Image (tube, rainbow, N blue to C red; front, top):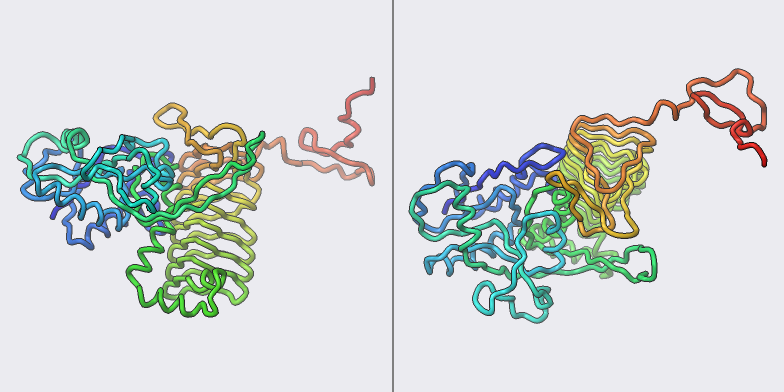
Length: 443
């Protein structure tokens, strides 16, 4: 079997890179997808939309380069699509619109459609599955083609497949963890659902998709580990005796070669790459740390995915965030944000990550688009630096190589030799003056 991955010309700002280069679980989205294809003996070809499409003599996988498929999603789609292709029709991947699908859908071109009444495009019937509550499906630019004569370009082929391919709704298992979110007003019980599943498809068209995909990465990678290493998983469950949920979480830690955890550190339910170092009193939970990541003393990493050789400085707090390789995370509290390759943040940089009323917009293709979320930080481009006392509003993207510093007039550059003792002083024009000198005159 062959697979054609079609370069659509899409680039993800601010990184200015094609979607396959997007960070994912300590590697890249393209590398993870290619590995899933390789495991099935599928020969991969990289093509462009303007290239001529050859004759397709047997079942052939065709993917836009914006598409990410987890290993399980790819395998289940191919299994379900074979009957359609054998009948002489093309097949298109679809998933019921569950919380996991909606998690990565906003700001993307994923098609929302009604279910078919019957057939492979109908809603899966199992009442206990997450799909049972879904009223719509979502279709992705992932196809398995039947025989087709040569002709047209790959760009035209994608358009043809989008219009004519039979939708194949892939069945899946999905857990939803409710998370209470703070809001203003009377709706104090507002909750969001954090999905956990290994059957994931996404269109990577914006930096938010890279962040959201990495927030789902732990569930994907963890289930892949369990399926690939059943004896190890059983051994770790046995090691949690006497069983409790807390003991099980502490036991379920995958450590790569040379990984070192300080005896006073707390690590649970995480995947550590080769050469990872976790320092004294540090905490790592529900996270993926790429090869060579260092989490310094007293730092905390929660539900995050860090690229290779990322350095988390002492006492830094990182939650629900992701980084590319070689990033330096130096921030009191970095939440729901994406940091590029070799980028860095000052300890005092302010990444505002919440909008308590309404949803956060991001700039996409020159116009603001809602993320359908009230909690979102920002994105720091490759090699960029955000300095102390810089405040960034939610949903912003700092370009590659940018260096953002505080205003010079916020610095105290001159300190008078004689200062009144016990008198409050304030900054004014780069020097210090008594606070009373700036007080408004009394009426």
